[in-house]
Image (cartoon, rainbow, N blue to C red; front, side):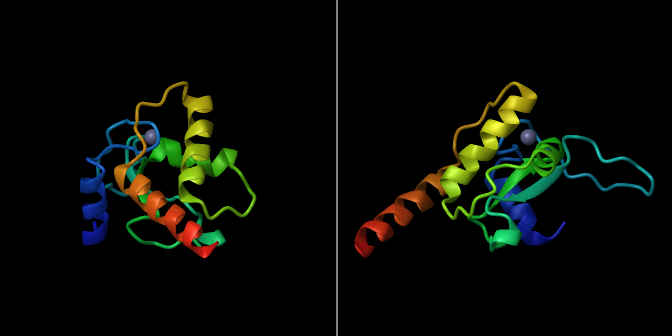
Length: 123
Ligand SMILES: [Zn+2]
């Protein structure tokens, strides 16, 4: 596991930031299937939309939620508002899993506050 991934998993307390399930880092053997609670990182703004691989845009996500997002898609419009995208993804996961046990990550709320004040300054 690379260092920065470990830092992000620790920040998120090894908890999927979408559904709230605990995640684990597995060292897989060849031909072993990856458990649903495997730790992955999700780009809130997808890479294809210019989302950065930084500590704000990456959050801990269990493999199951990652699959749901990959297969079910979400708001396809260009949207650079991370908080809205996060909530949108959470809604989709709730529809498929039936539950959500997470609060909005603190770093994302703080980022959104800054983002909002930047927008206000611009007008
Ligand atoms: Zn999850």
